[in-house]
Image 1 (cartoon, rainbow, N blue to C red):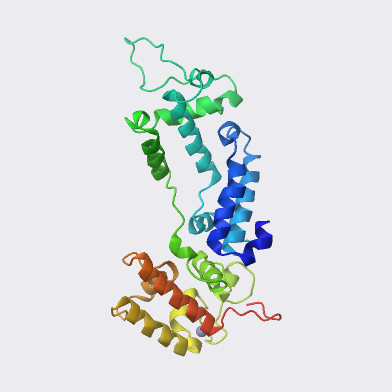
Image 2 (image 1 turned 60 degrees about the vertical axis):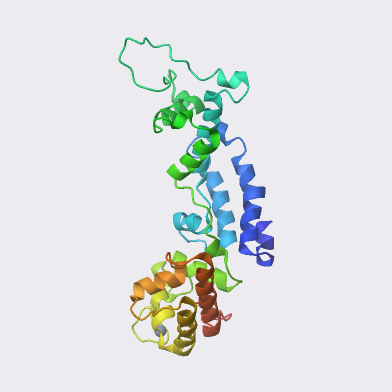
Length: 297
Ligand SMILES: [Zn+2]
């Protein structure tokens, strides 16, 4: 469904639909099935990857880690871990039915014996029970920082999300209109119509810019150096200097490319939106990404 309607809706709406309609199904009961085999769980990851490829409208061979980070979606394995720990927090503090909190092993070890802190691990004799919810989660629970186990639920969830680097979607990467927003995302993720990217993925035989002999066509070359687009670039930088109210000539090419692709950390959201809008305008004016039917690059 997402694939069929993606071209009709903005990127952020596609993300909201994925989170509410698809990921909620992938998450359902994940506390229980996290002990599933290593062959079964990747099937769910593939569903998530397919959805995220559709949201970002990037090429199928785009690396998963950078793709998930760019779209602002955490791996399902991390979500399962957070859900298990949150569930155990409820069981530990008796905020769930008795048949659940009674499963938490009580510490019956002698007070006179030197013993490790935390909840004792349940005795496991088989591989299956070793990877069960209780056994796996108790080990992770005991390894959490001291005092965290007794914190309130919302503080606990906030802390473990931070601990597992769960990032929110970067609003900036959702700014702009199609198709410029898609091409911008592809440039950022390292697999776009740039010849250097296509060459890197063995799609074409040489990485060189069609307008500059023997110079690879990289995002930096396209954004800052290619003489074919010098008038559009002059216009972009003129507007950029006005918007940022600073001299950009001292900035290195690498830092400038990073700023044009990812925004500047020193600028607020509104200023970064202006940068992105100007980059999108530059991409449209250069017509570099208009693909003719008989053209592969
Ligand atoms: Zn060039």
